[in-house]
Amino acid sequence: MIMIARSSAADTSDPTGVLFLLIALGAAGVYFGGRLAFNLGGAVDSMLERRRAALELRAQRTGNLSLAETGSLSPGFFKFVGSVSAVAGLALLALSLILATD
Image 1 (cartoon, rainbow, N blue to C red):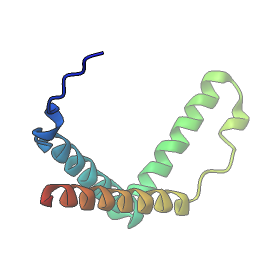
Image 2: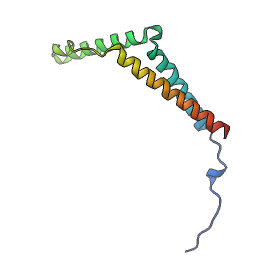
Image 3: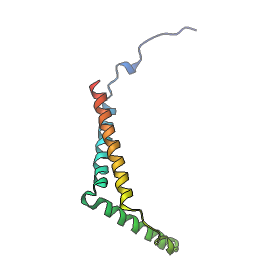
Image 4: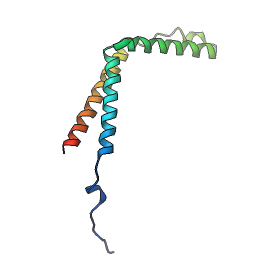
């Protein structure tokens, strides 16, 4: 077998597309996660109301009215999910900064 050695295209590629993607996802994670974590603009309250309305609509469609009487998720759950999303967004922003400086 004869193998021809040549340089791969990955050595000269420019990762600007990946950097922009990481920055966009990181910024979105920080923004939306921060809104939920700190309940800015009543984000948690509106999500709880939206969830309650969806449960009531599903109960009406199926005819099972016990669905609407189930306990709702607490605001602490949404704040926890928001804080995890914000930290993950910060990690993506840090990763993009590390990749940009190399």
